Length: 88
Image (cartoon, rainbow, N blue to C red):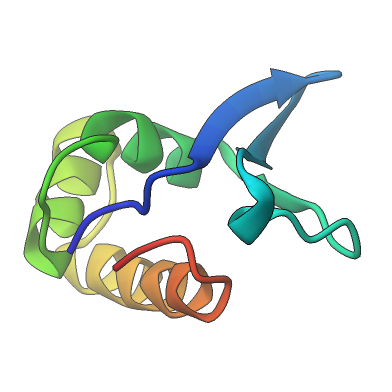
């Protein structure tokens, strides 16, 4: 999978927020904010093809977390990203 074109991570007032570019991506009814670890993953894979396992391995390399917890967190994150239309 890959992060769709037209979305960019920005820091706004100390918050990691996804900014949409282009008419197709703009929805002013919601703001998508990411916590520190989700923003870390976004930065690592922006512009790249990646798998769920790639994200798990990135978390394991950056944070002290059990693999089962990392896998659970990645699954939840990808579910959210897919629901928001951020990945393809």
